Length: 254
Ligand SMILES: [Zn+2]
Image (cartoon, rainbow, N blue to C red; front, side):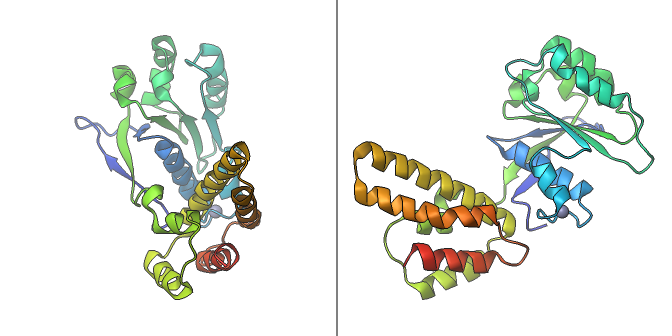
């Protein structure tokens, strides 16, 4: 389970155990958790993160899932494909996940049209509703879901020692870095998330340097981005995170 950086705590009010689930959490936590949840259910290797199934789910392209994201408030038209999907009976062992992101954007009319399906989904169908604004969820929806609060099990990226190390320009002692790696034991999942955060950091740094006319800073940001790009294109396979970080250290902190 250590590859999942989030944990979900059952915070359902009362004593209901409805099949549909409402994931509550800050920022992208419910989204990330929903992806991991579906990967664990559909991946033949228990959510390996690297197989085609896992990658398609990550890209929200898997055939056994349908992901809804509202422009503003949900409209009946936007949800029409959902009811089409539900009208197809699944095979006995088939699973299908319907994710409703920003469930707090469901209008009363949309919510009403969904209530029956959410309360008693057709066999094999699973509803995952996501929100970062639980106080805005309609009570009719909330009372029909098992509610989970999603929290990070890792420290925030800003205080992540690896993030800190790769965003400061000071050189570091390789032996101290190896000790840090042994202590942190970054999983593939955490490594991929960290790579994304590092990329965002260095792109911002590059833009800032460009705007400020700081050529040295610009060159340094470009250099780090050139190292990060291939790592993001070829994320670590299970068990290879440590080697990836060692290589990044050698290239970035030299
Ligand atoms: Zn997989």
